Image 1 (cartoon, rainbow, N blue to C red):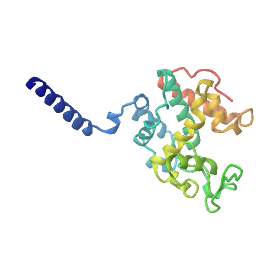
Image 2 (image 1 turned 90 degrees about the vertical axis):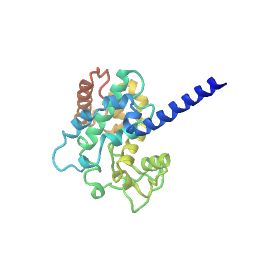
Image 3 (image 1 turned 60 degrees about the vertical axis):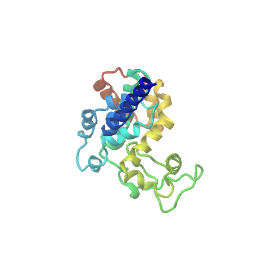
Image 4 (image 1 turned 180 degrees about the vertical axis):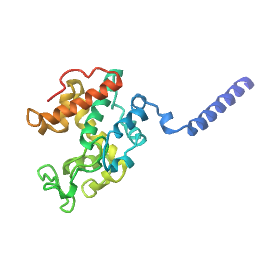
Length: 235
């Protein structure tokens, strides 16, 4: 009985020490994921350093915020090592295209755009005093996307769409929510399928230069990550 009691005390002590040590570790060390090992600080900074001119995104977007959000999406960057690298390359290719290498937080022109409200009443309600133009890493657009994102995160996307441009965590949440809802499932169809999901208006010969630009970013990131880009790069 005494030996059993001593063993129990030893085990309890190990648990307490382990808990204390875990609490002392930074979150990004505790939750080191395949995504974190691929999206290094050097990789993230390499994207941002390509931005030119006045870039509000440089003091807004951070790798830590991205990883904190990405860690909550277990399926993002999942699969084999190559599949993980391709999805990350695809995500940041579209982010680079949409934001000018993480330069822009809001769509250029914003509320001054002719169709800045982006309100489709057939898809959901709109607040007439709010605009649903592009915001965040993937430039979340349209009332129904803000509503869907808001419902998923208990955020009032209908009445406070500007939150996507004000809080970096919310901003990355909007991008990864949209990606997992609409894009993740077509990764096995090639990069071109992801472009169609992001902006189908560019596909089928409508805006070939933009389709090619997205694919070029993807190829570049795949090369950086040491993975073949695969087939079907265009839409």
